[in-house]
Image (cartoon, rainbow, N blue to C red; front, top):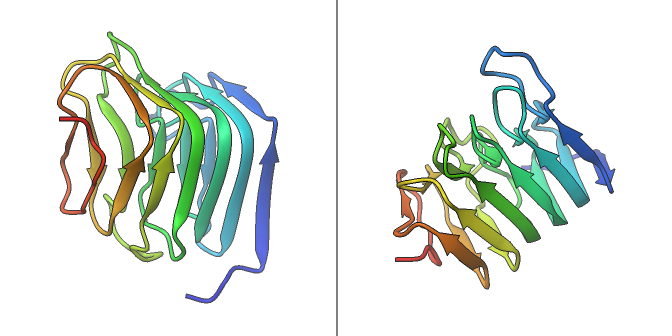
Length: 167
């Protein structure tokens, strides 16, 4: 698609325990497919009931930070992206007692934005919950150079391609 004319930039932000108890509230939520989100050093932990970071934006570039959510995915990109996304040097946490075991979601609802896919590189994914999984519904999400801790295997529960998951 056509590149967006708006860029939302988050630099050195922190959010914790935002949202309502409706299951649809998130620490950060971008519900506009015409913007691109650029993130640097974002820490978002334990939303009240939802994802730590949810974006339906056209694209995403993210470098540095920490994300976790007991009730949702640390990062959810449910409509895919029109441009390849890039997430680097981010720590994603799923705790032992977390009720949701989804580590990362991409295009699991639809591909309204597209299925350009992208890369999660560097950083650490702490999959301490039982039976951790990703949910990549379309496209290709490559986990490259990520340090994995916790439970194995990590499987994909969608139709997309996900190289780099630990066996």
